[in-house]
Image (cartoon, rainbow, N blue to C red; front, top):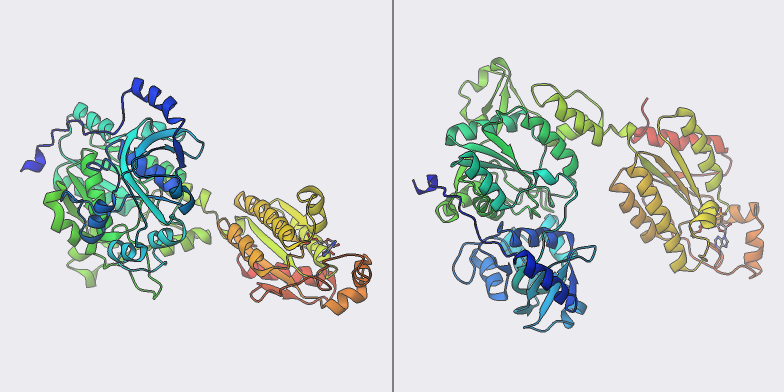
Length: 572
Ligand code: PPS
């Protein structure tokens, strides 16, 4: 068939020659500049290197409408995904249609120029409905659309000056033309691509191996390292895992290349998009499995797409994509035969033992440091995963005390620190209110704005400590709910957050008046004093509330330890 005649001729790129690029770079210094977001940098790279062929730039309004409504550019070509340059209103006001703008990376390096042909305010709800299937922010791309993307879109052709710089795994990254040249050189004419955003386990190896055999093709492991689903295993870990698995394939038939794509998790439309992208990279086949590029559950707890919707849509457009789908059902392990088989092809289902570990179950086992059997994955892969996802009891976390001045936060925090140091295993840092105000926030006072800044600085330091596997104990007043929530969100990206409300009443704090501050506050000598002349918003959802009246400090600290143990943060 014509699909077999993969001539692997170079495909068009948007880059100008080296000399022109040097000139253009100097000239572009005078243009209005747009600083690209991380996602736009991914999109731009694939636009420039031909990965998004036939696109010549960010979509015009007419192309965008066609893509949203029926997956077609204005000229009729199949294109399922809006690739748009979203900007702020403020930036849009500085740009007129017809003008050239410079597109810079996050360090200010000019990557490209764009002639703005279109500027419009998109109907984001329509985009969400049509492209992602529902205007529901439980979908990561819909959430991005509404909460991160700017309100105005700019469209127009792009002139490429240079590729975005990557410092990691440089030898594993290839443009479409580099891959085509590689296939040409090795005489590969049929190539089946495997798209992935997850670590590969034995089931995937088996599936890709079977796919290559079925198509009698060479195999390209083509993992996405641009942006994947929030919460995925980071790409550094994944690439180390892929490298380990690559050793299990015959090197003469299989290769791996990293794709700097920003996924949208758009299921069926995304599968078609992936097909076009792989076609551009010189492949003739692509594996589409169960729930391809699935975004997970919607806000009603149901799947956004059916498990085989992506395969169905791909099949509809297969000829136009120009690349064949190798469809795969779910692979499971049959214990009696010690091998993986497609679940729907097992005829003696009732007489054999079928084993399977779901993604959720795998995360639980990693989380709790439990066994991950050899039939499921490769020891090297499990090893890498255990390094980045250590069991909870080895992960960093933050204990965040909040309460009035003189409530006993610092005293309990100190006792907790000593107890945690006695246990050992993880480094402990105490970010006490007074210490922080001396070292991190010495210029700040007690206005709402300054308190918020102070707490966010504490949150930032705590999140870094948590990320690096340590224990951060914070003990500021932190009077505002919204600010405490912001800190929680910062920390929870990396580890657990345990909020402890030290609920000593104002009357008791004032009665104790350890530092004599309440007296001064009552006399008006200290302004904006929490509880007296400034608000304290009581936490409604703290992990723990400790009473300090008639309870000694040691017991309060013990309550925190027990809470941490119940959260799985302290091993028995
Ligand atoms: S905040 O709101 O979280 O930024 O406050 P924090 O950094 O914890 O600082 C509170 C300590 O500063 C002393 N202090 C005051 N507290 C509250 N209001 C006013 N106006 C004020 N002025 C000085 C006070 O000693 C607090 O210490 P603790 O340890 O909480 O008693």
